Length: 142
Image 1 (cartoon, one colour):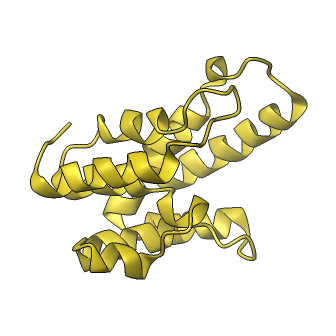
Image 2 (cartoon, rainbow, N blue to C red):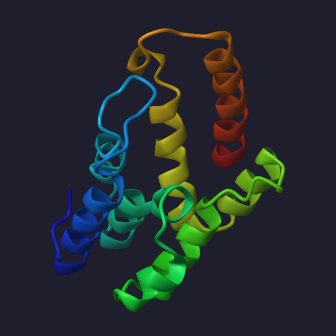
């Protein structure tokens, strides 16, 4: 993890935004973005990893993040990572691919989400999600 004033700000926001959320196995959700952030190699990528689901899954907006001092490069990447459900999934992934920071975070996000050992029970739905993630990983890796 890279520790700077801004990454610490992102860590605090990540925790505040996700503190009451759990993943599909009941584990505190906040461990997921922290796991991603630990794999990043730049300050911006760490921040994006920590905040990658904040806009999509909480009441925080991109404008809120900009007001908190997060740069345009960060908010642009976060905007791409927030999947608008009206956009087909692989089209969304293609858009993410065009931004190097968003792409790096999305790749580790998909790999972590593809780890079926995180689940208490592997359902048919989880296997279908996994196939979709495999296609997305292949698209991002091109």
